[in-house]
Image (cartoon, rainbow, N blue to C red; front, side, top):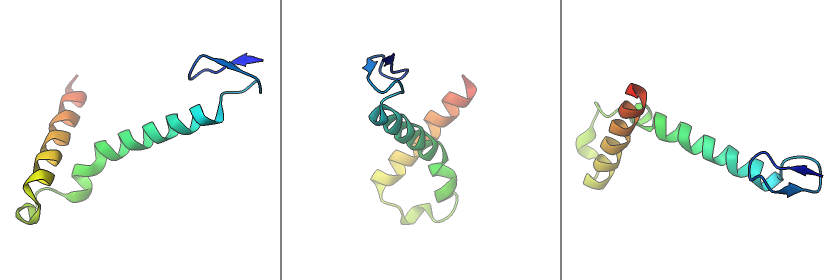
Length: 71
């Protein structure tokens, strides 16, 4: 028996729980996607074609990324 390094609960297998490993992997992927979405869409090109909601989300993500980089 071992304690899972992710959720800190007892693991009967002696390893981290598979669910915990998958959840952490998805969180890391989501963070990478969030940090790279502005570059993928290239806001400087044809941003007039995007809906206002999409523009707001992208601007928020860009500001959040800049804030995290400056911190």
